[in-house]
Length: 270
Image (cartoon, rainbow, N blue to C red; front, side, top):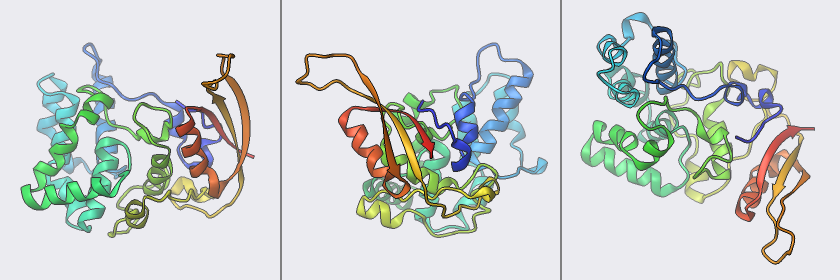
């Protein structure tokens, strides 16, 4: 995981300080409850959950080992509760954006992904759309049956990640004290960027970002980069260097470094 030394400025501190939540074979009752809470928080977009909204049967089945974490995530996403929060109030493309965020832990990368899921939803229905994420190879490779989905693209060096995903997910995220419904936008957030294959500008949160609002602060970031040895060089060891980048050039620079095979060790606000 790339170390974000001032992750709090971007509102992603919890993801730089905690490990993924996993249900192990000998988990204690308290650990099982932590898994249940993490699954609700992720799949429901950090929404406060009323006691009457809890899926008691699915919780009991998970506690007894009858179903896996993936099955529990599926139960939440296929529930009427999820539909009420994210399907009915939103345009279809916004619904798909949120499905990517909640179930795969990332934002859509390409217009083809949006088009595929929109066609699937319209032709085969709601459950086919939800199950397509949970039954995908990407989900299996990222979370398997026992890990609660999490925001993977805040880890810019995980397998299969794209530099463009960091800024897009940040744009959907909007702060760890916010919720997806509290953002109050029914239309999709990434239509233009995804359609044109453009990087989403990174907006650095102001102090109020902990409540979910994103500021427009501009600044400079120091990237510590582990550079791969040149293919034509006799020296095979890797070297570490630092690069100063303006905030509006951060995403393109991350993409360039990713293409060159270099690894970003840290991103620090100057």
